[in-house]
Structure formats: structure tokens, C-alpha cells
Length: 235
Image (cartoon, rainbow, N blue to C red; front, top):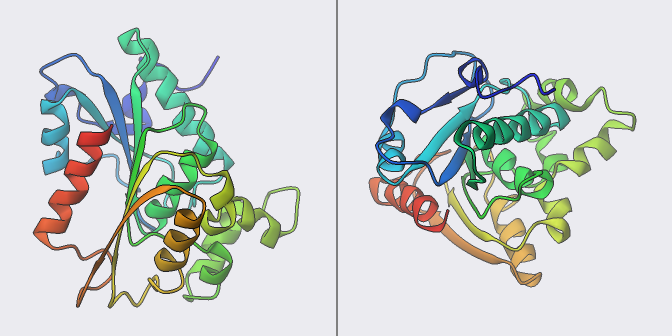
């Protein structure tokens, strides 16, 4: 029996379920960035309300501040999905989203999810995990924490969770990637641009938006609205 059930979802994730006014048709996962996700108290957001109006469960899993969508994280989210299926007595469509580390999480979860998402939208995602290992001072320890226990060398483990290196195995769904050209934490030229180019070479449906004069995960109101509407429309 899975540790996560329809009776204890709130111990493992935030959801907007109390806002729903219609029967749910989908679950939208939004994955947080590095060092976030410690608090179990998350206020409802604009996306929470927008999703609730459309019968979409908006869920932010409590999967750990340094998870990098490792095996334990994937297992946890799959169990959350099955708990929602059990709770509502039906199969629900799945969407994946997130920012920075959560952007990588959104992308790589589509690769390994037990129930493949229909849509994925991410903000300033890490796409080349090998490059990112040395891109910032704080990433080596977090990546070791996430992948150091695999039964393989660390570099090989990182390849299993690097969207760029898993591009050939990514599902054929709708993708939206938003990046910023003043990002000094996750370089768009080393991550988003290279990944988008490769995905398009592989025939994937990828929409790419690059925002000028904005820093890491700093979206304009218009871009943020596009992100939300893309997810809600395509899920």
C-alpha cells in the first residue's frame, strides 16, 4: 500500500481543493525552486483560483528543498496522482510546471511520470544538469544530496535527470518555456536555448518566450498570465 492515500494528501502537498466549485477534471503540479518548499503553509495564489474555476486541482508537492526531481520525488508525485484518482474515482489529466529547479522538475517529470502529463510549462528551467553543477557555488552540495545515493557515478546519475540529455526520451506533448536574458543564476544560453533547439530538432511542440531585461524567474504580468493560461488551456 502506498504511504500517500486519499486521506492524507495534505501531509504531502498543498492543494486548492477547498476552492473547487465543480468536479475536478485535472491535476496541475507546480514544482518549487531550490531551497523552497520547507513550509507546509502555502497561501492560495492567483493560479489556485484560476484552476479552481476550471475544475483543476492545483498542487504543490512537499518533496524537499534539494530534490532535483530524483527517484524519491518521482515516486511521491506518482503516489499523489494515484491518491487523487482514488479520491475522485476517476482518471484525471495531469499537467507539470515549475521554476528554476522546479522548471527542471516539470520537464523531467514528464519523462518519468507513471501517468504522462498532457502539458508542461516552466520558467527559467535548469536544462543541462552537468553544466549547472559548476554554474553556481550552491549547486554541487544540493545535487549530491539528491543523487549521491544512486548506484552509479554522480555524473551518470545527473544525466538521468538532465532534460537536455533526456530530450530524445521526452514525451510528445505541448511545452512552454519562459526565460529571461538577464538571468545570472541559470544562463538561458546554456539551458533554455540549447534545450529548445534540440527539442524542436526532435519534432517536439515547444513554445519559447525570452523576456528582455529581466532577471531569474522575474516575469512580466503579461508573461505570467501567458504561463497560467497556457497550462489551463492545454491541460
